[in-house]
Amino acid sequence: MPSTIAEKILAYHAGAEEVSPGELINASVDFALGNDITAPIAIEAFRQIGATKVFNPSRIALIADHFVPNKDIESAEQVKRMRTFAREYRIKHFYETGKMGVEHALLPEMGLVVPGDLVIGADSHTCTYGALGAFATGVGSTDFAAAMATGEVWLRVPESIKFVYHGKPSKWVSGKDLILHTIGRIGVDGALYRAMEFSGDTLSFLSMADRLAMCNMAVEAGAKAGIMEPDRITLEYVKARAQRKFKRYVSDPEAHYREVLKFDARKIGLQVAYPPLPSNTRPVEEASGVPIDQVVIGSCTNGRIEDMRVAAKILRRNKVHRNIRCLIIPATPTVFKQCSKEGLMDTFLEAGAAVCTPTCGPCLGGHMGILAEGERALATTNRNFVGRMGHPRSEVYLAGPAVAAATAIRGKISSPEQVLSKRSRKK
Image (cartoon, rainbow, N blue to C red; front, side, top):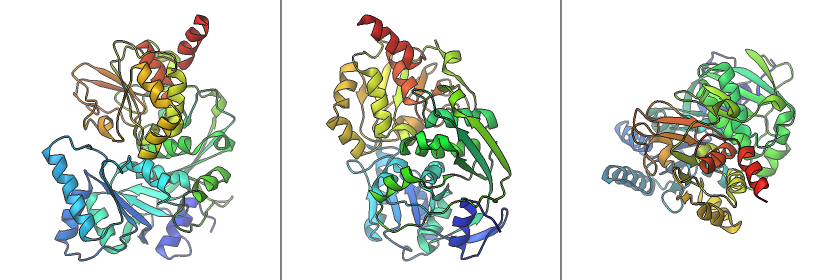
C-alpha cells in the first residue's frame, strides 16, 4: 500500500510492513527528551512504576532550559532532581546552564536527532525535528517516563495533510511567515491529530532554520507532527552533525492524504499574529502602527544564527526605541558564540538591546522578560495565548525576526522596509 513519510517511519518502528491512519501501534523510540518542567514529573513517575534502569542512557536528553538560570528555589530544586537522576542512571545528554541550549534548537544542532527517527518529547514543540525527516511528537510526562524505562511508546497513526508551497518567497519572508500564514488559513485545530507534511519547490529556498521553525509550529494547528522529506539541504545539515547512522524516508507518489493544500509563496508577505491565537494572522501592513513595549528575538522557533543575522542586519546603525525593551536570546551556546564571532553582539549592544544567555525564559512567561498589566510584546516565539508572557491582561504578537527587529527600532509594529528606507534617506 502506498504510504506517506509519517506512515513509513511509524511502520518501521512498530515492526510492521505498513500501518494505516487510526491504527493503534506500540513503537520503539529512537530518542526521548524532557525539560526542567516536565522531566521532574517523569522522574517521579519512573520511580513510582518501579523501573530500575533506562532503555538507553545515550538516547535520552534532559535539558534544563525553561526556568534557567534558575529563577527561584523551586526551579533550582527541579533542576537538582534532573541532575541527580542523570548521574544515577548515567544519562549522557544532561545539559544545564553554560552547556544548555533551548532544547529544540540544541538537539538538531548536536546531531542527536537524525532522519528516520521516532522521537518523543515531554514538550509540545518536539514536532520541530520533523524538519530533519523524523517523526517527532510531544507526549505527557508519564509517557516520557514509560519511554525512558521501556524504549517504547503507544501511538495512534495520524492521517496526513499535504501542504505544497510553490515559488520563491519575497525578501525578508521566512519559514515563520509561511507557517503563520498557513495556521491563519486552517485555524488552530485545522490539523488536529494529523501529520502536516510540508513540500513544494519553495522549500529549496528555505534554510534549515526556516524549516525547523515551520515544523516547530505545526502543533499550533493541532498537529501530531510536522514533517518534511529530507532533501539536499537537509542531508548537508545532517551529515555535518549526525552522531549515528540514519535512514531517509520519502512519501510514495500515490500515498493517500486527507487533504492537499497549495500555497503560492510569492504572494505570502510578512505576517503578524494578533493575540490571543497564532491563527489570528494578518499581513504586517495591516498591523503596522500598533505600539509595543517589549520585543523578544529568540526561542526554539527563531533563536538560530540565521535569525540573529536577520535581526542584526536591520538593527545595524540603528537604535532600539526609547520606549522598547529589546531582548535577544541566542538559542544555544554555539549560536551565542557565533554571534560574537561575527560581530553581531556588538551590533545588538550598540543598538541598545539586552543579550541574554540561552533560555526559554520569557516565551512561557518563565522569567527574564515578564510583561506587566496592559503591556504588549512582539516576539519571535510560537504562542500568544492569554497570559502567555506574563500578566493575563498583557498581549503578545507573533512575527519573524525581520519584523521584530524593525519593531524594536520604531516602537510600534513595523516592516523592515520602513526602517531601511529611512536609513537609506539619511545617507
